[in-house]
Amino acid sequence: MNRRIRKKKQKQQEQIEQAIAGLLEVVEEAQRKHWQLWVEESTKQFVAAVMRHYEQREEYSV
Image 1 (cartoon, rainbow, N blue to C red):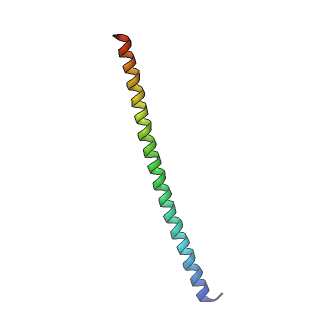
Image 2 (image 1 turned 90 degrees about the horizontal axis):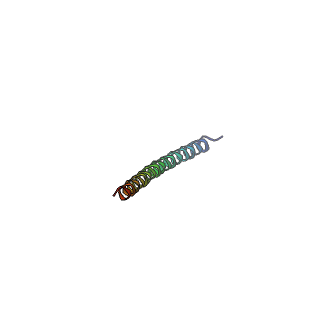
Image 3 (image 1 turned 180 degrees about the vertical axis):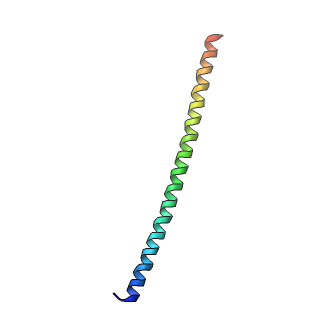
């Protein structure tokens, strides 16, 4: 193969690898954000359930 063609293919390969690395970073950040939001929402739901439970106990004890 011609040196110019090899150099062009190598440059294209490097660009593809850089694009893949960029996409992986975006996906990883989205996953972190997803789990962060999931934890926050789960915690809110748990706290709400505990509060309801104790509010019901107070109603019955009065």
